[in-house]
Amino acid sequence: MLMGEYLHTIDDKGRLILPAKFREELGENFIVTKGLDNCLFIYEKKEWDILASKLKQLPLAKPEARAFVRFFFSGGAEISCDKQGRILLPNTLREYAQLDKDVIVIGVSNRIEIWNRSSWDAYNEKIAPTVAQIAESLVDLGI
Image 1 (cartoon, one colour):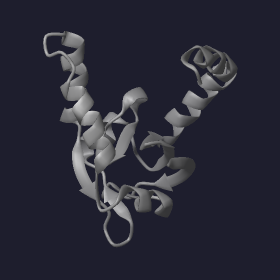
Image 2 (cartoon, helix red, strand yellow):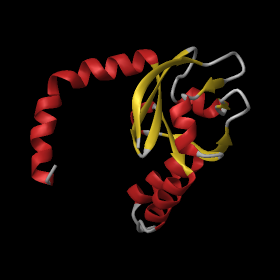
Image 3 (spheres, one colour):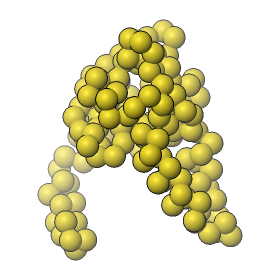
C-alpha cells in the first residue's frame, strides 16, 4: 500500500527522485498521467491495467465518458526510474500540474500523487475544516 507525504524537488531537467518506499512498490516500469485536482497520478502497471479496463467499459456514446477517458489516456506515459531513483516527468505533465521546483509526493493507497507544493498547501487548508463532514458522509457508503 502506498502512503506517506514527502517534500522533494524537481531539477532543471524535469527529474524527480521518488521515495525509495514508492520505487519498491512501483516496480521497474509504471504509468504517470494527469490526475484530478491538478496533480499527477502514478500507477503501478498492474493497477493501471485495472483502471484502463474499467475506463474501456464506459459507454462511448456518452460525452462525459469520452472526455474522462481522453483526459486519462492522452496524458499518460510509461516511465521508469534511473539508477539514482529519479523519474523524468514529461514537460506537458509538469505544465498541467504546475510543477516547478518544490513538489509534494504522496501515497494514496493504490497510486502516488505529485503536487505543486503551494497547490497542496492550499488544498489542505481548504479541506481541513470539512474532513469531519466528509467522514460522516462516507458512513453512508459503509466506510
